[in-house]
Length: 196
Ligand code: HEM
Image 1 (cartoon, protein in one colour):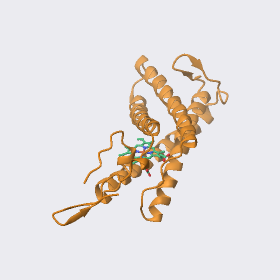
Image 2 (cartoon, rainbow, N blue to C red; image 1 turned 135 degrees about the horizontal axis):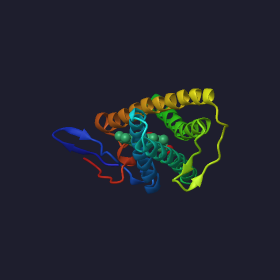
Image 3 (cartoon, helix red, strand yellow; image 1 turned 120 degrees about the vertical axis):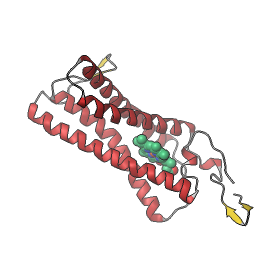
Image 4 (tube, helix red, strand yellow; image 1 turned 30 degrees about the vertical axis):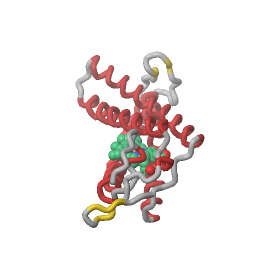
C-alpha cells in the first residue's frame, strides 16, 4: 500500500494490490453479461412496439436467443466463481458490504430466473424456443392462453426489478469510484491504472 501527498492532500491509490483484482475470466463474463442485458432490455422494449411483421418475429427470436445465452453465461460465471472465488471485499462500512452481497445474489437469481420465465412464457403461448435456430428446447408447459397472460406479467415484472436493481448497482459502482475513490470499480475493469 502506498499514499502520495500533493498540495497537502493525502490520496489513496485507486487499486492498492492487483491480487485484489477480479480474474480476467470473471471480468470478461461480467461485461459480456452487461452487454447482453442492455441489448436484451432494449430489444424487449422495442420489439413489443412493432406491428406484426417478419421483423417483429425475427426480433422475438433474437430476444429469446440472447435470454438463453444470458442463462448459460450466468451458469458459467457461477461455476467460475465457485472454482476461483472472488477477491475479498474492499474496505467499506458493514452495511454497504451486506447490501452489495445481497444485491449481487439477487442479480444472479434474476439472471437465471428471467430467461426461464421467458422460456415458460413462450411455451404457454405455443411457440417452441429453438436456440440459435439450431437447438429445439422442450416446451415447459402446454399451450394455455390464461397461463401465458400470467407468465407475461411475471416476465415483465422481473425485468422491471432487474432494471431497478441495475440502476442501483451502477450508481453504487460510480459512487465508490468517484465519491469514495476506492478500488471497487477499478478491480472490475479490464485495464487497471493505479491512480495517485
Ligand atoms: C448491466 C448489467 C450488469 C449486471 C447484470 C451486473 C451484475 C453483477 C454481478 C452479479 C456482480 C457480482 C460479481 C461477483 O462478485 O460475483 C457484479 C459486480 C460488479 N459490477 Fe456489475 N453488473 C452489470 C453492470 C455493471 C456496470 C454498468 C457497472 C459499472 C458502472 C458494474 C460494476 C460492477 C462492479 C464494480 C462490481 C464488483 C463489486 C465488488 O467488487 O464488490 N456492473 N455485477
